[in-house]
Image (tube, rainbow, N blue to C red; front, side):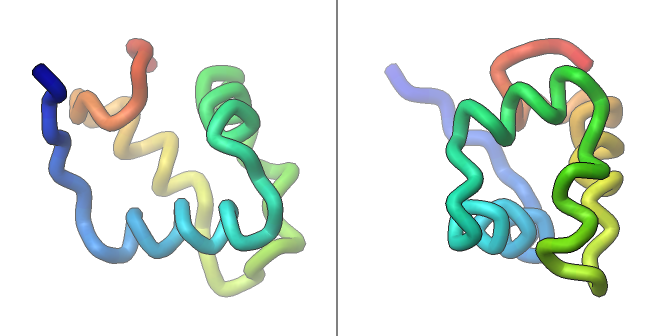
Amino acid sequence: MMEINQISLPIAYMIETLRSHSVSNQELLTQIEKKDVSVWDDIETNFDFNVLLAVCRGGQQVFPFNC
């Protein structure tokens, strides 16, 4: 059975913005696991992609690994 993880709309928007700039799911997961989101700084300068790291550290099981 598939588990549903809840995330906020702004987080979902960040992820979808990355995807719209050809960032694959695997690249997204890899960069978050490496704790390096600086590679996306030029994609959208109004976003603080470090929020994705905070979500991961916050204990939410959004990503398939422990942060």
